[in-house]
Image 1 (cartoon, protein in one colour):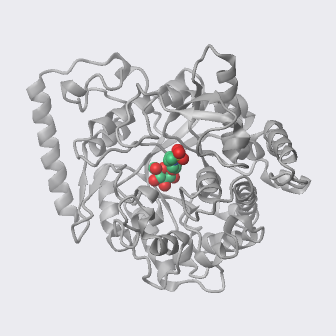
Image 2 (cartoon, helix red, strand yellow):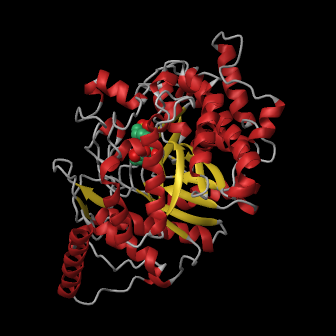
Length: 523
Ligand code: GBH
């Protein structure tokens, strides 16, 4: 999509839209539409990650990351047997990406730096000249057109040479991550005001270290997955303190870590056991990361500490599978965030269970002892795990508010990812509705519950490499034609409606109405 073509496309789509609306007559007004508006300083952005869009896997001196190495060795790992070698080719087509963001009038772009593109061996003795200038140019060109880059240091693409040494299970990774971060802050700190260190440590440690759902597919369930948790937390804190000490005084940016969470509802809200199961789940999967950083006492939650200690003892381990922080580390972690960066997609229904098919012993699943189910009556537009339950978002925001004084009083919540997948149609009414409904819950959390939410990034700007799903599931506001040589990008209806929300600062449920047979989807 060169700019002229993009604009033409946009215009064609808008004309079609207004014709559609005319044909349907005057839309009824949804009373919710006028209730609340997003404040002027509320940030609307779009989000991507390096490995999912860049391609250029061996260009410009880039080293290998674990997703390159693993999928080249195991081509059947992804659903479509495809890899990230080219992806949406943003390594070459980044100007098109900028045009897309401009065309929908969005002014914040969250993206990640590929560690092995910048440091081919993972270590700071060798900085790739091409890698360094790729991101420099990208950031500068974004800023020129008034788009603020928000940068994630690590979105799962560990340099392979460091994975060979154990990746996040090796305590020395803290030093190497700090070295990498120092290079990044030196190179780009004059341009970037908002950083997140690590994307979704929970997903990576649980699915990649504890299981083989994600790379590195270690299957170190119950042991490696907690080492991963422990050292990602410490690496994050070390980098937060590095920035605070050496860069913040003059660069004045903000730093956080992106934590993800499903919302957990009890399967039967009238059953106290299910209510407890939902609480247990949140402590073992969310608070295990959030409590060391955002609570007033610091460290892992005592529930988590006791649970893993007891299970470890019963299983014959002489030490807990969950490592201990020193007093100094507890202090380093506490308050190591200037905002709460939250990724959220869906809700699960929880009940207690001591064993389920697929659980391994030991494992985080088995330690948690909670069976997770989807509510069959909620829509699932594109993946079994992603059912649509907008009120879960509001409950999650309230959970953070209720449980963490820092979140309530000092630091705002910025939603760094939220979105839904489908099968790629450009008339993506379900995505339009998902954004409307989830953003409406954000407004309710802000205005009716007093949650301090300051920003929202859509996942994702364009269709991309979706990890084990390859290119089969689509999350983009823009469609990418992966078969075309120039990876043509086309706006979907959701690109227009999301843009409309950001521009008008309100949700207009009538802006793009689904055909009548889809009307009832989210009621
Ligand atoms: C985010 O992870 C990622 O940050 C992003 O890169 C990704 O593209 C996006 O979501 C959409 O998938 O573990 O049984 O629930 C979301 C985490 C990890 C949640 C895989 C769903 C699927 C199976 N996702 N998980 S399960």
